[in-house]
Length: 127
Image (cartoon, rainbow, N blue to C red; front, side, top):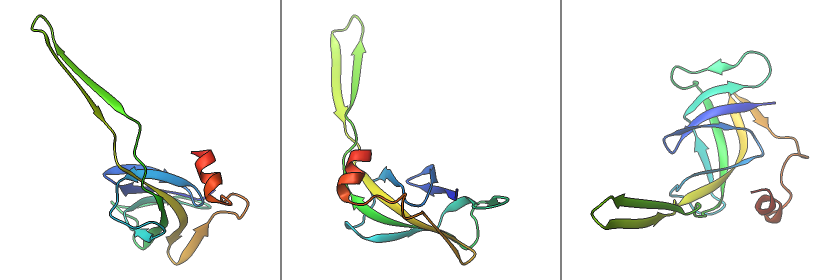
């Protein structure tokens, strides 16, 4: 099982080829292919390659699937004995990306064909 730990949207994510992930909104069009180069760790077969802070020559190729919005979070503030109440809601703008491949040292790591989703309906059903 090949995987990588990347830094994207000021977060560290464990990513695998053929799976999709939700990141904070990226300025990219639908079906656009992006290359993420902030790879902290790559594991394929054998010992993992750990970067200091990033693995040299390692990239993750992703494709933008959609730009959904996250679940609504309710923020409620109340000051006791003052009759002060404030209720707010927030929905985070997200970007759903599909990890196509992980490249390290010229070697391309991809998912098995059986693991890849067949259509957009399969992706929506899984997430």
